[in-house]
Amino acid sequence: MLYLVATPIGNLKDISYRAVETLKDVDLILCEDTRHSAPLLRHYEISTPLSSYEQFSEKSKLKRILDLLQAGKKIALISDAGTPAVCDPGALLVKSCHEANIPVTSLPGPAAPITAYSLMGTMKPFQFLGFFPKKEGEQKALFEIMSKYQGVSLFFESPHRIIATVEKIPFEAKITVFRELTKKFEQMITGSKEDILKILNTLERLGEIVVAIEPVALVFQEDEAINFALGLVKNHKIQVNTAAKITAELYPVKKQIIYQKLIDSI
Image 1: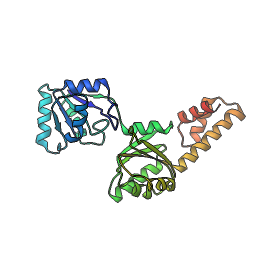
Image 2 (image 1 turned 180 degrees about the vertical axis):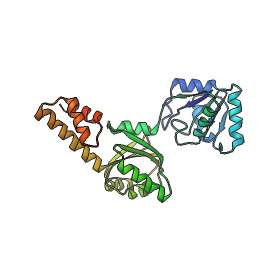
Image 3 (image 1 turned 90 degrees about the horizontal axis):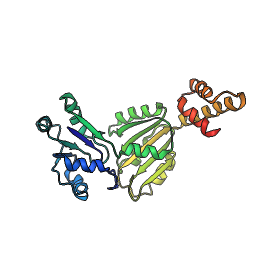
Image 4 (image 1 turned 30 degrees about the vertical axis):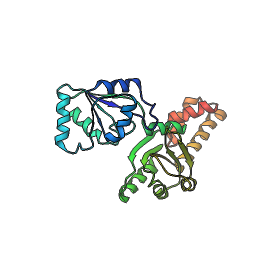
């Protein structure tokens, strides 16, 4: 059995009892970097052998892991932070286990994109785009996807590239930058591109960063849609559910969002 075990994204206390018990019970723990994960295991007095899975591109090592699992060994997979197999090399092991009919289970826990999204106070849909690419062509393609998405686009960015990335955003957007999530100096910065750049240039940029982008054109469309729906309810005495359905057919805004906004406003 392969166990996918979520670990803290910053605060060592953000780990479940089940996760600690599982890490103590398995025969082997696979991680991205043993130097990074060792302090967590020491903190919770976990003595299970620890090995790096960074080189899964080497088929021989991947085969050895699969052989252990097929022999009945229990192995836990963790990442440097958060939920494993999400934008890290562990995804290849999970895929290989499925192909070999090896059972895989996931122990839920911390995930930076979900933590960031929950702090936004929005009911809009979201998409997670992984790590922001380094190649210009891939960046342009991703920005094109973001500009057309009717919701919030989330991605990871490194501290030393965040300013350059924000500067490249080619459309007007509501931008939120999260830094040091769950840590002592956790910070959430929201505003236009100009607002964000002004603040970022004054900060000591440390820690991992999550960025959320919502095109302003879509924000305006939602405001217009809600006002239209409110008019249907208040001026024409149309039921909330019907007003939400009518409005969703006229505006690129989901019915559930319109309905909830109406309920909150009436």
